[in-house]
Amino acid sequence: MKTHRMMIAAALVVTASAAAQWLDYPTPSVPRLPNGKPNLTAPVPKTADGKPDLSGIWTTKVGYTGNIARDLKPGEVSFQPWASEVYKHRQETQGKEDPQAYCVLSGVPREHVVPYPFKILNTTSSGTGPGMIVILYEALHSYRQIFLDGRKLPKDPNPTWMGYSTGHWDGDTLVVESSGFVNNNWLDNGGHMGTEAMKLTERFHRRDYGHIDLQLVIDDPKAYTKPWTVNLEFNATPDSELIEYVCDENEKDLTHLVGK
Image 1 (cartoon, rainbow, N blue to C red):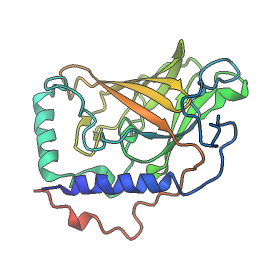
Image 2 (image 1 turned 45 degrees about the horizontal axis):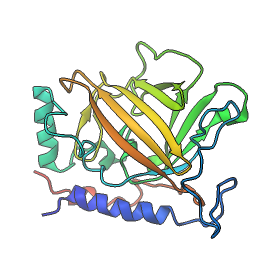
Image 3 (image 1 turned 90 degrees about the horizontal axis):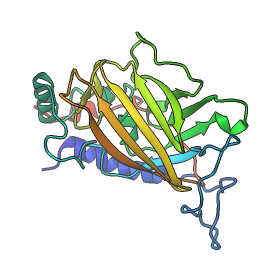
């Protein structure tokens, strides 16, 4: 029997697909095929300083909303005993205690697996210095700043859903390190947890115009006995734009959550 969360995920996929089609206006500088469609296998665009330009609107390859660890083998995600019980409880209650159900931010890495588009803005493309990368997430109108100016992660940051992120380039791959997360982070709809001890390492590699490979390393010794790695794929969504997301207006969802 399909759970409520599974039905929500299916609805979100439809919503995401619709969002990608709402505007039909050619994005400037997009490489085109002879028929006018975007050439998603064209070479990677570069910023003024020669680094890969990650800018654009992206969606994640579907299938990870309910389980970010779906591709991993048994044992690759090894819970601490208390975290195993929490995860079991979240599965049994089918998301009743999910903060997002109450319109709280999703945080990362969850924003990478929900089926909503997001926009990456690369300030280095202006040639004015290292700057930062900003990610605008359509879901819940959230945003994220990735500082590229060489600063270190703060030792005692104010906990946030998105955490505090710094980045540097390793060849043509952007390496982002984040910490300072809240203690009740959900990494997916299924309830994989993150705590305030979580450190997240992301490696963004744009392999051609239309695709970014993302490797996530989740290191949270409070919740897991060892770090674990997830590989995701982002697909470019040119000729479109983000749309307004409203979560709590005329909300009628919570009363239908049917977990234990």
